[in-house]
Length: 199
Length: 199
Ligand SMILES: [Zn+2]
Ligand SMILES: [Zn+2]
Image (cartoon, rainbow over all chains, first blue to last red; front, top):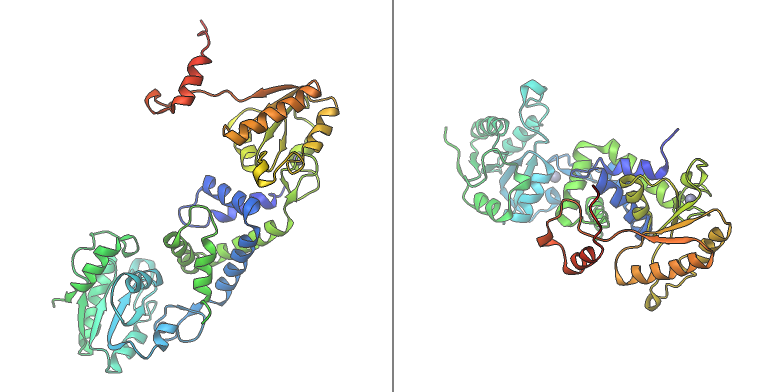
């Protein structure tokens, strides 16, 4: 016996982070009882996003165009480049801090055991960017985890090879914490207190 | 300037109950970064559910067929009918209790000021059901709100007109609840409804 459409919908909601069986049920019933138009809009937005959102050719952030809106914005500070692990990290930095340079989204962090090396993080693209000569400071905003720190040190070396100053967010981000879940005030302070990475 | 697909997706997630801007962002990034297949599945499930789930012709619960699976199930107790306000209420009763009679889903409660009367709740259909003569007890499980109580009294009258016994869920101190935190109305009612302890 195949699952009913309602059961399929409840099951499908569980792909979302933090959504268990009870919340999924509540979501399904809410949409069906009170907001079918909104449900249709969410279905359309999801289908379009999943199909048409790719990655920016310049910074690897999410983008529905070849070059994302941030990279295409000529009025930002070309001397600053900020390397982050994920699009979500880029978003919180953009929203929480006054940073108005450009970004480079690694889409991961070095993790040799998982087969994630410099190539998977697009570091040849980052190196080419640094070689262009405009970037003066690489703000390394990887997460303060073991792998994030290892990635930061690798990026710092890469920056110095291109005579670019590597900096790191100030302490204040809790050890072992994920940027995405840090409160905005702390993140903003940490961003403002970034310091040059020691050799 | 129109919103990007990503912004549209974040905005669309906010139709879900309990989902604010931050949660919506997390959901959108989660789907795009980690589970595009799941996102496509959710989009399909939502579109199908919104378009194809209607109401059972017999009990008014959600159903993708003319008669829902519960009403079509001949092995339940035909002497019992339970009236609930919403499909979600039907679901919790089915999941939390041992009840195995049939249901009638009002899809609301009497609310004259909002133009919701007996006709909007399908009560002529409920009356016809009671007139069939098989139902012996109408379990009235409307919510203990002012409108829910008014609806319960109306349903009880309707039941008695058809020589069906109306019953109501017991009110009282919730299992595991501390007396100190129970609201006074509930506590007073529970005190007045005390019963002799069994041996
Ligand atoms: Zn870009
Ligand atoms: Zn039914």
